[in-house]
Length: 429
Image (cartoon, rainbow, N blue to C red; front, side, top):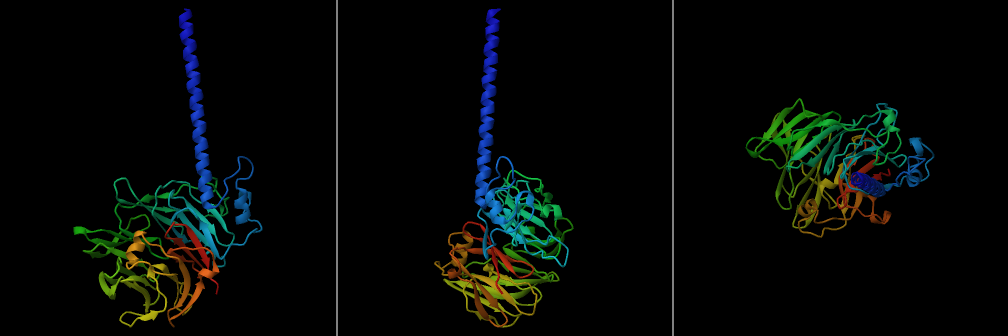
């Protein structure tokens, strides 16, 4: 009997030890997660929230001018002209119209997606505040595409090596727009991103401006590709062109036109086409290392060429017309057209200070070479170029890629190709 009691006591003691070890392990896990959250917030340039009291850190309140609970307060620090919005890598961004009111300024809201988490965040360029909008995890996002309605496509590589695309929508509600800045642990303002996965293996996607439609480049028969128009969730598909080639880049313009260009390579003959009634109409032909940027509401286009270390930029006013040489050296991929608010053809380009490689495009696309850029304004109608942001204007350096401009033509958002961080440049007119 005594031996049975002794065994029972040992069993109870062992159970207590196991329970304490489990609680210790759980405490260590929570502490580790807390440190990860702090590290994530630090990467964003924010403080993590204190254990009690305010739901926003002191640094965040001071920089953004947003107090606890997300209520707008007097701005402590003005938003710099060149704003380093996010230091953690991002997958893409887009300016979003958060109101349908014509009198309201809607172009100051920039939505972007974190590369590591797939979280969607909002940067307010008037206050400098950054708010996380979604709390659904999408790890390892390498591309994010937005439209003006708050729709997003998150692109990644799945476990089988295929390209995976999730099309979702972020509700643009007043309560969401004014919610408190959230932390990675979540808040009442963040919401799950609703949507659905598109078909696997889509090679390229371009949102159709002003619509809730997508332009898709999908695998075709015999190794080629089909150009398809679909609704944002991938339904209601219509094939507009089929090609035996697959190495295309898509361009969808606000005036409804669709362009294709061959993916560029230094010295290789490049071509750009417009799709008209299911056929290809040549726009530019046999340009070595062609990079291409068509302009909406006119036949104009910027194009660059690269061969043997010689990088040049041109303006083509219309199909069949001669090209105008522009006195800056850059690729059209580093440029963005200003919105057609007047009759001027204005573009903004990031211009590298030098080209260290004889194969700039190939090395740049592979990430083997990076540049230090300045920003220039181009009047394509006159060929005049003027500096917008020169190296002497800032101590910051960046290698600009994927530039986008707001609907008022006041701000350019772009990524740094080297570290994938996010920047916003205010245009001084």
